[in-house]
Image (cartoon, rainbow, N blue to C red; front, side, top):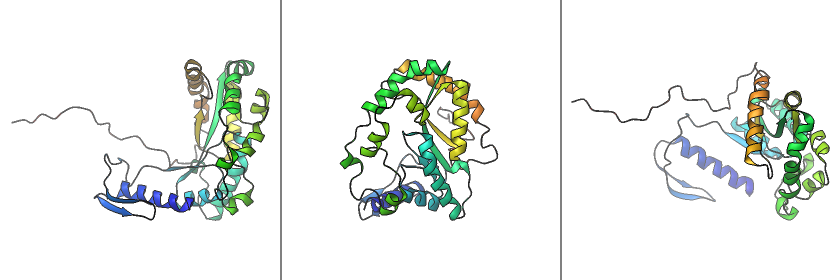
Length: 265
């Protein structure tokens, strides 16, 4: 039922973006007498669509069927994510789609400092707070019977929250978080090297950064973000230079300037 409701909601969103005139939507789960969104998308026929996934193999099929970007969202690191992404790329190849790295996205916790030791001093308390205090979800809610399909269960992928996830992070130290790839942290040189390894191993072109986690204060989060932008990001731009990114929003060719036109009479 969940997948059926999801598909219906997807149809409603796409139609609302692409149908120029008001229309009625009479779905099984949603009935709307008038659908007429405003403002309308500037991109035609509609904005690029990124679909978040946590390991459900049906999401791979959905993304490939509609040519959407698959975004694997996990707090448990690129080393664990590599298994999921291998499955996605195997599926992509099996249906004859281009193995374009920009077809995939991934979210990663990143902490940048002057040195590896400084990164531990600055960020360790906040990373520990996040993993051990912010991810408590009752297993019965996180992975209720029927929530995942039999095919996904057979694939062996663990849920992102709940009992299995809690056991995965139990009593981990800063070194464990870094060694397992939950966190990519250290000097700019360390982060650059590790991120290139991670993105290459997963074949991912769209990186979503998590630069603020847990109880990290505003000033430190801003410093982390600035360090990444200045000292890490430029070195990653050429990683997939041979491919075109069809899934990233394109800027407007002309920027509209505010102001009222004056009629000349």
